[in-house]
Figure 1 (spheres, rainbow, N blue to C red):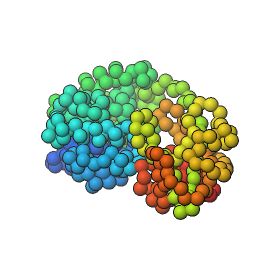
Figure 2 (figure 1 turned 120 degrees about the horizontal axis):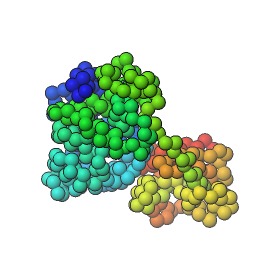
Figure 3 (figure 1 turned 60 degrees about the horizontal axis):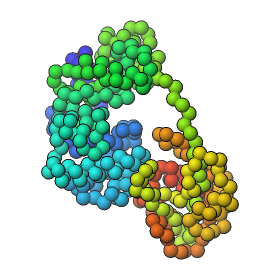
Figure 4 (figure 1 turned 120 degrees about the vertical axis):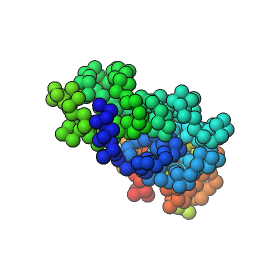
Length: 346
Ligand code: SF4
């Protein structure tokens, strides 16, 4: 199988901004940044962020010296902000403990901040051509189909990893890892896999059984809980919006936010009750409609209260930001949705 897959890869590999072209040397820094950004995020969404990042911080040293706040601003909109914190911590550790150079082996990489089993295997294989079993969701799907594995995910994860390990080639480990990723992304897609174009058709049990569209089997996941809150969008007479910095630990840690009441699995509080948690005294009015945002473990439903006030000093962890400059702030996507929802109504 590896030969057929590698031959296919040589002809059909995707050209991606973080990948070395054939015959060129891989830059481990680019591999690492892209692999962190690609966790839970699509190639299309990552492209512009990757470009901005490596333009602003072209080396590990530059990234290590950057203030965390600037990194979070650059990361705003990409989601899963803990990745940005760990990226920064990892750059600092690499400079401090490794002279700014990545270690090459999977086990050494695992010791770095933000390196789980997948990322360590991917960077070891792609950047250093180490023999590593690189298994993400795409690869799980391909392997489940190749072996017609019907035990549902996530229970079957370990078995799929073990099966993937049996397919590893004896050389070209980085190309092989990327070939499987490309196959999963472009041919062996979740719906309507393009088996007629696949280099592995003859080896694929699911295809032989006509079951490729039914695999992999997934346990139906439980509905996510819904948390609710009221967001306070307030603008002063200089067209400045009040933002607050979130606590460093936890969800969206260190990012800026439109102040809200506590996110709770209760019914929405009344505006009269919620005003006690408002950042300023004002004549708050509810904006019609709600904002919904889906996080990995819960859905957030927000009502938005809007108000206009006279210019006044910001409190601790707060700042007034000119409306037109909001795009420069480390505002996560959910906060940008609130701004968008509120602005039409004020
Ligand atoms: S033959 Fe079809 S189902 Fe099997 S690996 Fe190829 S694309 Fe996927």
